[in-house]
Amino acid sequence: IPARAKRVIFLFMWGGPSQLDTFDPKPQAPDNIRGPFKPIATTLPGVQLCEHLPRLARHMHRCALVRSAHHSVNNAHAAAVYAALTGHDRGEIGGGARPDDYPDIGSVLALRRPAQGMVPFVSMPYITKEGAGGPPLA
Image (cartoon, rainbow, N blue to C red):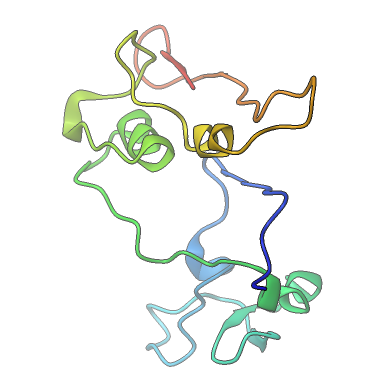
């Protein structure tokens, strides 16, 4: 019987460290492209992480590392976050919660039957500082 995930921790780091500084150090790239930290081996063959993530490196065989996500947004953080969290790319329209929004990535968990009395997922809104007034985002 294949293993089935029972829990998910989805960490979305708004303005967090670069992929070059964490999950994709590009050790074979030229000095001016690769991350500044040394890569370390993980328990997942062929995957290296930044030297500052040794505990995570020991558990990578239990993780899913997605490096293929992209969007068409040029420089609008709220719109890029919306695309990342919903899978729907609005392009340069921008972020901000609207009644016709696509569901948050956590809604996938709602497809499973939650324990009695438990909600399937929680997403805390974030008020951005981008633009005048800063739109709320799911």
